[in-house]
Length: 66
Image 1 (cartoon, rainbow, N blue to C red):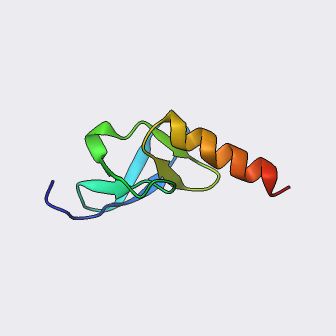
Image 2: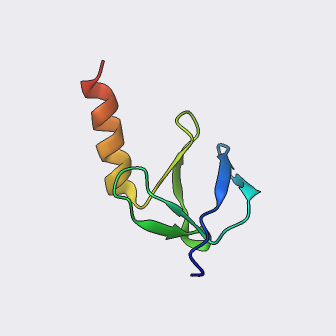
């Protein structure tokens, strides 16, 4: 990883690279996610997640804020 953070636009089944880079940062854990390993994101919140664990954390946070 060359440590250049990408900026992405998330869609339901794909993402678009807005600014070139090799990774994004998980919105929950802060872990770097190489773009070729990125599988989890929220279209509504426009944020990436490292794994299903972080997705669940975000869902629980949103439920608790209602």
